[in-house]
Amino acid sequence: MKKTLILFSLLMSGILPAQTEGTLLVLNKSDDTVDLINLSTGKSELTLPTGDGPHEVAVSPDSQWAVVTNYGRANHPGNSLTVIDLNKKEVKKTLNFEYQAPHGIEFISDRDVLVTCEQSKKLILVDIISGKVKKAINTDQETSHMVAYHPASKRAFVANIRSNSVSVINLNSDSLEKIINTGQGAEGIALSADGQEVWVTNRSDDTVTILDTTTLEIINTLKSKEFPIRAKTTSDGKYALVSNAKTGDVSIFDAENKELLKTISMGISVEEKEASRLFQDFDKSPVPVGILIHPNNRYAYVANTNADIITILDLQRMEIAGRLTAGREPDGLGIIP
Image (cartoon, rainbow, N blue to C red; front, side, top):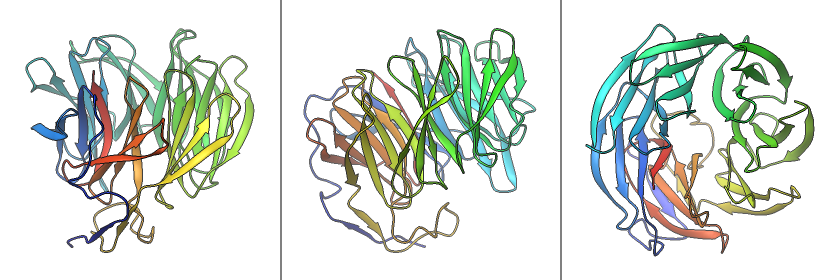
């Protein structure tokens, strides 16, 4: 069914922030594609195919590769990664493996990625050059969704939605070190800029749990708006952003003192919805999910997955700075600086 959108703040063809460089990668879950958007012009320069149901994307530290997790769809879980050569701007290859429903992904070197595999209850380490799975470690929890890597300790923190927990996996010993119960629907996860904390969004509790990465204990629990689904932190240590899918807004916290500074509405109402999309019971929310923070820490990009729009936030002014469009059902975001 075609959607009707009401924009309360800016027109879709409206303003773009000045002096923004780089290329934004946007995964379109309903189209099985990724768009490469020039941030200077706000236009997509290229659309590439992915596998079935692309959900998350990671860019290698050397900016040579982007890797997409092909999660699949209901009753048809995916089992592959799409590897994109960013220099040639083409799909290099598709890596298939036995583990099902790959979702969260993070590079730990220029060629190695950590990937959560929901239905297999695994965290796998994949060499994207050889295509081999180097490690496969049990999370022992249900719906292992997102991952954050702590390079100093070589620990991976995996959020498990149905088990309401975080699995701490030690990559030195290739073992499950600890399971931490954080809250109902633990999903989004982000490492703080100084590496001392992990922020976890508990979507069914409307809370954010903060973990100490050394002691592996809970040190704080914050309230957020309805259905907090993702978390991202700025590299300068100032802010932590949380997207609230049901209320259609993004909360910005002071990362140091944990104070809520502002909650910014996405300013979009989705009047009609497609039955194939997730979260259709969220009234008229555009369902903000994926968040990416530009390396300059000035702007954040938020994928409004039910509205087919990426909203740009100005983190200095704490307001909406513009809109971008890609394909249908945008979610996972990456950036080529």
